[in-house]
Structures are given as C-alpha cells and as structure tokens.
Image (tube, rainbow, N blue to C red; front, side):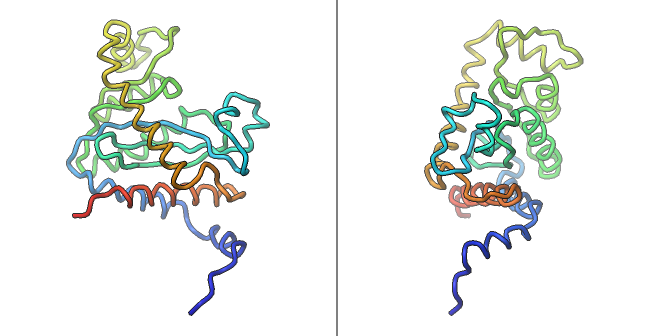
Length: 226
C-alpha cells in the first residue's frame, strides 16, 4: 500500500492541474438542468489566506490589508441551489468585471443545452447597463439593485431603463425577487462552514484550484441521484 504524499509534494503537483479542466468539470452540472429555466443569482465573498483573517472587518479596509484575502465569485441556480460557475480573484478586485465574465462563459453553454434564464439577481456591485443588457439577451429579467443616483436613461440599454423604472415605480414587486438573494448568502456561509473560511495555498494558481475543487464538491453533494 502506497504512502500519502507529503503536503509540499502535493502543492508542487497542483500546478500541473489545468484550471480549464476543473472549470469544465464544474460546468458539467449544467447537463442536469438541460431544457430548464434557471434563476441566476451571483455574489462574491472573501476567503482569508491566513488563519485569523476576518472578511467582515477587512472588506472596506485598505488594499494592503485586502492582500490577505482572495475573493470567491459564484453564480448559482436559485431553483436547484447548484453552483453553475465560479472562480477566485485577488481580494481587492471589484465584483462587476467578474460578473460579466461569468455571464459570458455561461451564455454559450446555456444556448447549446437549451437552458433559458428567467431572472438574473445581484446586488448593486454588479449594476451596469452592460450587465442588464447581457441578462436580457439571455432571455432573463435583470433584478440588480440600483443606487439612488442611478437614472433610467437607457444609454443603449433598454433593459437598464426598464430595470430602473421597475424599481422606482414598483419597489415591492422588485423586492419579491431580490429577497431571494439571501439564498446565495446562505450557500456562501455553508461553503465556509464545510470547507473553512480560508485558503491554504499561497500561489495564485493553487488558490484557484482549491476554490474550484470546493465548488465541484458542493455540487456533488447536492445533485440528486438519478
């Protein structure tokens, strides 16, 4: 019977695992949703790179302190609670560019599998005309929380104009959808409870691998057997 490799040996060989391979493994969950409608919810959270980190107290601090964290970005289906895509970034990076990246990566796969989007729910960190337009192009209604300074001027995006008007004129209807964002917050809490609130890897590639493996394991635990 062989011996378990030492931790440093494992860390060295993690660099040989292609991220694309793990991303494709995570996307395999989409086949379970074939010909279904999804309600897409996206959010991000911090994972510490040292034992005593606390994202709740550090997230609005200086960039220097945020270097102690990586940020986990995920999109999930509200109906199944399955994570459809996810990856990590440096802790001080904003959410919006990674939200656009998740949408772009999902759009082609959804089209091939006949999956349609019913709604796209996100907090104000993802709000933009570009995001509203991309969700609309996937057939969904963007339910992204706006800020008080936002105006309905479409700026090339009819979806943005309608989204702002909907929140201004019918806030109670918007809240009926937006309130379900609490689901992704609960799943993020569960991920941290099961796998821990920190990543142990120091190299960026290894951190990405560690995060993706956690997301794959989450889906494996929540897919109902056929």
